[in-house]
Length: 264
Image 1 (cartoon, rainbow, N blue to C red):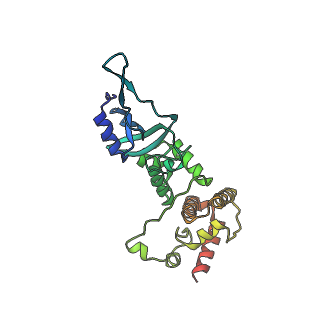
Image 2: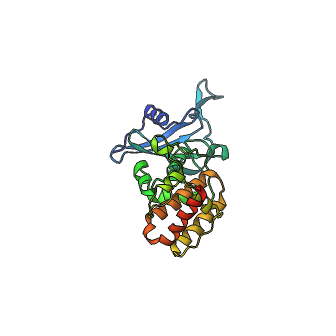
Image 3: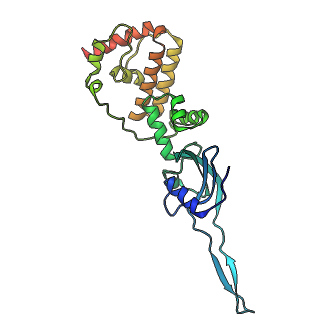
């Protein structure tokens, strides 16, 4: 069920979405059944009514100011609030500095910059795509579109991984490997994953799917060579090997030998 327009509610929703003055909500649609809010925002002030003097009358004739220029409507999925999913719309003419604002997004991407950073952080930490969709209530198709743009080097983000705490953080990769059995995949913090992604280490690969995985990840890393993307690709490779370790015995043995040689 949609609610009738109220300027007070529009202002409140804009504040809840983290949109500051001079931006304002010129329109909204709030569906309490689907738990979805659409906000149309603009940086232009409310239109004012000017009074022009009529030459043949003492009365002033009202005249509304000209509406500002507008462009094609753009839309981005924004952060959830109050258990509602939020979609930001604007038809304002935007330049690049506007596209850097947290509540707006990049042209062609489905998420606002603030939500994009959250999604990227989840991907970099190795969270499954299906779990990201459930956690942030975003469609898988939108997440796939975002990840494709990321893999192609079309977007970049600064990211500092969360530091591990507790006893597990005190265990070095070398200690982890010395205590591992023959079927264990080297820990994701092991230096070999970075060297495999960057192509510094070459191993004999018999499994076609792993060959294709290496080709894809190295190509994606070559398009955007920074620590954040490298970390994400390392986690992606580690996840793949962990899932398919039963069919990768030949390659996994080489990984363990290289890891042990690195820590010796």
